[in-house]
Image 1 (cartoon, rainbow over the protein chains, first blue to last red):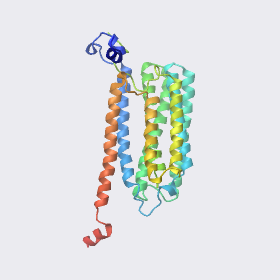
Image 2: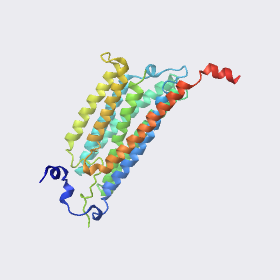
Image 3: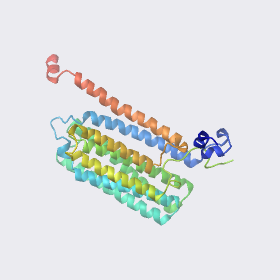
Image 4: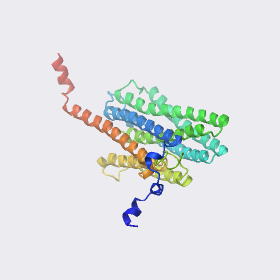
Length: 209
Length: 123
């Protein structure tokens, strides 16, 4: 066998069925791919909010700027909560794949608690800023800030509701293929929120000057 | 005839065939290190100040890569062609929207007449 043959040989080359005759992909692959496309479109939507923030972040209209408003420690704790919840969501996925119900309940509960803690810190920050007179109507900078960070927070809120719904389905329907597919879509959604948050803490909080 | 694993595709996020707990643990460790590095870089005086935003951007892109590989399990392998192409297109659009907006707006800003002179003209 030549080197080129050795390098180009994949698992599929040993299967002599032509690709046109292998039939449609299994449902779980089609569903996950479709949901992946949705997540990418969601990230494209966030990119528009990021672009608006990048353009407007200097337009404080004489009001407070980022460094006077943001508390780095608060952001670090929020980031820790979300990152840890992404990890426990991974363990949740593994429990589902092993069809391990107690494990799934445990990791779902930890993921939910960490996500809720993140939201609590974020809402505390928002109410503190609004109480200081730095609400979304104060300047273009603050409008862009509340739109971007608030949209991410809404996604997290929606994710928490979805997680509760899914655990109710696991309790009543068990690990049916349909339920497992939805659970895997949820875990993709949750990981995507973490990726968006990396952009938020880098551009909004650490990039503030 | 159903051939479940031979369609040449892989679902994004599936952890079954990809190292399990170790994969997520490695992702967590990398992500924590990169996050702490970002928070350190934002305040440090060991780096030439104008270079700090570039450093932050590099750390953020690195961490996003860690999440894609270790949490989404997306690779550039043959089973991931569709997932990877969709990701590449998504990144392309994100880049166009973000950098295009910043470029156009900074250009308009630089070429805009100062506000006081604009108001004089409107009198």
